[in-house]
Image (cartoon, rainbow over all chains, first blue to last red; front, side, top):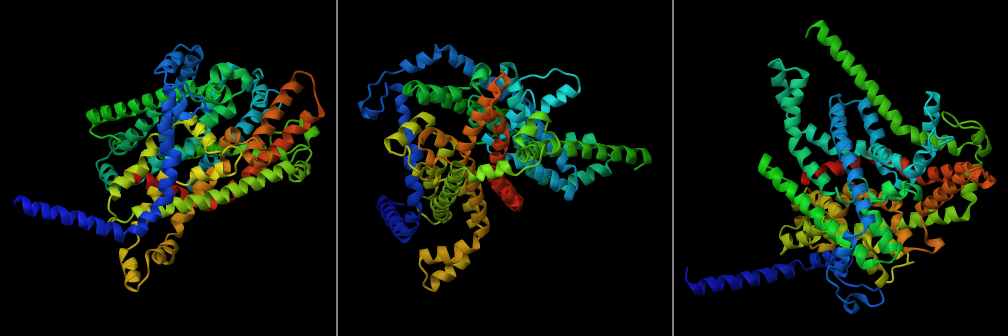
Length: 317
Length: 293
């Protein structure tokens, strides 16, 4: 094909695109509200992260505040409370992943082993319910149930002869409590994706295995688990990605469950950012921590993803 | 299958059933406890322990909650916020999802990427806080509504639903001379009621349960939603319970817990009431999302 005809084709392509845009002008109008919301409330704050490298003053704004480079990054890396928050974040998220993640798979397997019927349905309905309750309410319940004198847990402890303890007020009980309550809230809901994966396994595989005389555990290890392994892998990548932030045990959970007496074990990075940025008005300092946190999370997800791709041949992206 | 195998699987089945029943009880007990406590007479609850049934059955906690102007005002704020939030989200997200579902739309793929990126990257708390300050959204009811018009995940759910509507319906309407607006409201919307209901529920539950924005951006008491009032009551009772345990028992501290539990029930009942009807939609929506992702 010679050059002239190629150009002609390009021109007619551009013309065609313009014609198509004109024909779809109504649809661009439909996109407008969402695009405006997206730009103002999602993209604008991303640009605002520049304040992590500035000495940001609300009165001066983005263009009036002086640039200070990595000053606040150095500062938070020397702050002992940051390391306390980092430790708490890693421990709380780590406990939740180590216990909650396998439990939700086991619970999904157990639910899946039942034939569809009212018993299964009721159990599922009940186990999803706590997901829809706000953390404010859940924390209110937890405070009451764990109360030293009249809380049901302590009454149970007293009945079996153990000592009563003011659980919500001792720093050493915060980690176990937040782990148990978070799992209580999300266990049922987290099974949904695994149940979806389990229901898509071809039943003929099981029939063939039964004819070959496979035992229950053989079916589990040679059919069920390998079939849902990709889904487990993808979910694990996403879970690991929020190890430094609040994906597993949310900020809502920490904020509502903590109190001043347990702050040594309860303050996470997200809480630290809130406390410094909003509470003490140290905007650039808090923004720097938030920026570093997002970068680390992003690197972890990408790292986990590429490892998974290399080892097993599939990833989330 | 021999007799021993049969007995083995029966024992397995029964023990698993028992475990599931225990899990269900553990899941439900906190709610049950909250309800019986809210019906307990506050003084009786101090003397006898509330574990399985109310101590000194009474409605007085509820009458206190409903007479309390602050709680009722907050209830109205929550209802308004939820209704307005659902409407705004359906308007922005629904229209965008419909436009994106058009395969012939030029730059479709680029626009999709533009909308999906915020699912993975965000500016975080502090830049958002500063932005709301600069936009004068502090102490403004609109702070609850405006930023939550677009939900990337919900847009993907809606788009995949629109994809299932046969294009021949639209084409027929177009031939009859209907414009894009008419096609949307006379054909697409009536056919999409199931997905619209699901998205309305997702967004509604989120708005009803949200408590952090009023804490950050709103100081006016009459703009606080129910969750904020609840949070305050819990914190106050917590403080007074700590006082009571240190020996300074006050009448206020004693009555606090029962009223707190009644407020908890009032704030949770709307969700628990709609929950069984919507459960299957919620699950379908999430599974659809899982398949897409």
